[in-house]
Length: 62
Image: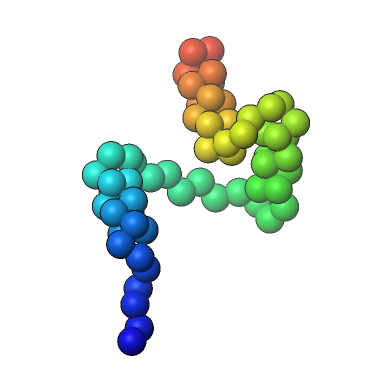
């Protein structure tokens, strides 16, 4: 029997699909690790939140 994910995973995926938009930024090889380390260095527990804060800061400066 080949099952594709658990019920909990399916429920989370359905919730995320209905409540979030997804962004797919591409960066040069090696940059992702650099950005993740910088987010950690600045005290972020979530790399996602680091990205959101950077975008919001850029908007405020405009």
